[in-house]
Image 1 (cartoon, one colour):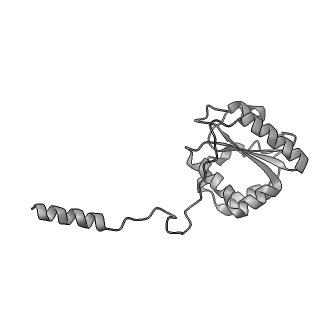
Image 2 (image 1 turned 135 degrees about the horizontal axis):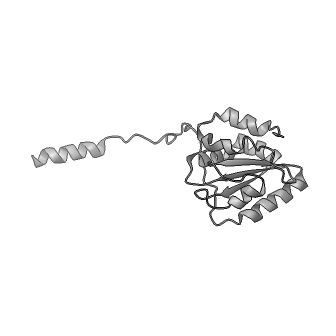
Length: 163
């Protein structure tokens, strides 16, 4: 009886373990990153990005999310891909702001007219002067991980203010 137990355990241990999505080198459903820093000086980071945007004639992309959030990590992961990174670099100063469980750095969203973080990520597109250019779509990114790559790219590449 004990012999059969050890044979069963040995076979179980020898069985191949399925790989996680993307672990074999194939593309995962979407990339992920964790750029949201709890201890960052978020207000200073935003002010610095606005100053750089004025100097470079760019917009500011303010991504308010959290590392616990699947959609926040998914959108940040797309932004790290070379295609996105190059486009964003030419058009935006990108700032990631950690909002915890929607209880941290909310004053930053309020500064630009978003009274409440309804979901993460909330993505604000700001002019270099700090005007919110996407008041309607800013809170709609909480499904970012399930959005199509091409649609995400097109939104930011061909962004038109919602004024």
